[in-house]
Length: 223
Ligand SMILES: Nc1ncnc2c1ncn2[C@@H]1O[C@H](COP(=O)(O)OP(=O)(O)OP(=O)(O)O)[C@@H](O)[C@H]1O
Ligand SMILES: [Mg+2]
Image (cartoon, rainbow, N blue to C red; front, top):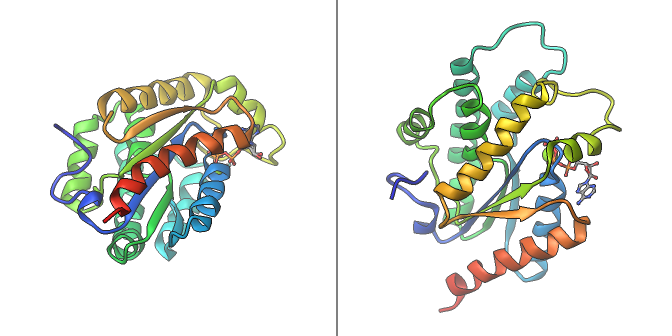
């Protein structure tokens, strides 16, 4: 089956790789943090990363890519290449070594974000996947939690923020394409991607995420 795997899937490594995905404001950062706490309490070594970000290069690219009042144009392929560059560095410098050491890595966004956000700009998924394969940034998550939320609800949650970043400032039509892209990710990669309804209290969402993670982690840890 075509996957985001290629040569090296994360499940070939001793650790466990979880990506958290969803539209802007769906609760990814909240849930990544809660899940990390719960899995730490279960006795796992847990590392949370954010994509783009975490590495020195990634954080600089993040600032550039999300700059709220960007007064310069960013062509779709250029945007694809910049997110890819951050992910290559993150994978090589942090995610792969942590998985090799047996840790649970929780990534606040990963490759699916490129599929759906750049896909919504008509960049073909196959090209994005192939670029990631070529660059060794194609670790396949053991579990992808897709926090599904209507765009209007997600927008409402972000209203208190001082300013919207470059991608948040895109029109609703763009964000609707992003949400539809995530539903397509769930259809296309059912072996790893699970839709979680995010239109509930943070604790209710967290309970589902933890249950899904435990169900996949426990068989892997049992000897
Ligand atoms: N289940 C929830 N119900 C209501 N509000 C929530 C819920 N989860 C998170 N929030 C709030 O909504 C806002 C967005 O949450 P969060 O930052 O976790 O989302 P995100 O998906 O990481 O957003 P971004 O894409 O901008 O990084 C925050 O103010 C957070 O406290
Ligand atoms: Mg966030």
